[in-house]
Image 1 (cartoon, helix red, strand yellow):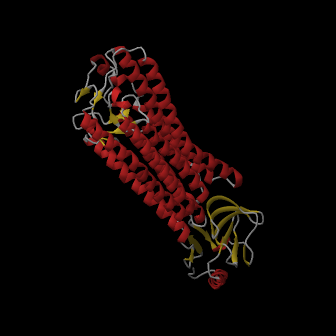
Image 2 (cartoon, helix red, strand yellow):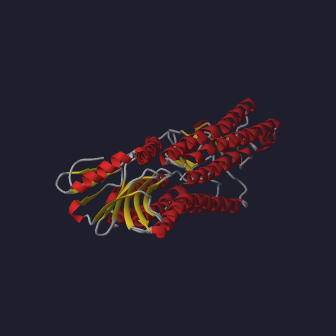
Image 3 (cartoon, one colour):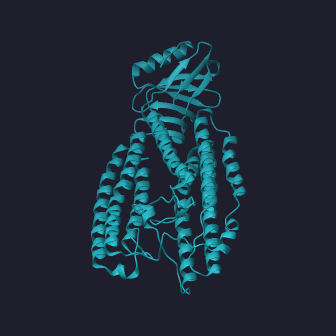
Length: 464
């Protein structure tokens, strides 16, 4: 898992670094997130700012990769790997913003000193014909019923009792993300059409294509996330290699496909925009720098659009000057915080919790462990023995396995399908044979394991 987190972190880092470094070159009339006239783009002071900012990105990039390496030493603890990954990712985002913000403020200062204003300041062009056709440009929101139904399907797949929590988490997350993309789609459909030129037909075609592509992308991402939930839950019902393959495919699609989709849509739209505007004689620009906080956050209470095109990176961003925009913006922070805290806490429980085995005195034995609870009747026990060696040929179908513990559903050469609650390298191990499955259990302390075994032989009592 530590290696997995390492490569995911590197992947995110490369995307973020390329996004920020793209601001080192002028794009249309923007440089460092500042609107500038064509003649100002040749100013020597901006060229010097470009070189110094590039050096800062290289310096911070090297430090971030250096600070990421320690995650490879945490392979024994999933929770610590996960927490390290979260902390490092947050630090990366904050650190990579520093060169851009410094360059943005310096470029803004130069603009003010030299009065480099572009186009129409504080004016918004309205194309009446374009505005009338706005509602017909995006994908119908009724389509989001499909990903919601797919996400709900995950709750119907039969899984082992000990994996019910994972089923609920996967299905609930998929439904939550479907609602999230639905809200994004609504906000996107309400976004003010962009006026590119004085030609209405060109404006309509560009806006129609833009909205169609992005609305299809949001819908596609909702479908993908719902399918990931079904794949994740389905993997719980499989054994051995099949489970690993299905799980890996799910992680791949969840991590890579949405990012590739965003880049593909952005590339296609920019290519189409460049081709279509090539023949236009009058391209319209509006100088609205005052509404962009540090060149990245749009705050314009005079603009009713909830979503607007980004200045940094690709896609759209939120207008926090509107009530809806503020709700979405701060709601995202709350959602991400809860998600990170929740998954981090689950990881800590998995690494540092100890399975607890109890009998209720009525012939039922229960093993408690986060997300992998299991119980059975003493009358169903067909064989009970104490062994000194860890079973060989184990393949995990789901659960947690580190250098120190093995928890979840496994398949062993000697026992076959097994419910496992083992502390590795801490013999002896209790082996319980049931009609359809083996249960393997031990405590970290050998004396405790032997006492539990003795209590099991008696068929009653409470033990750990």
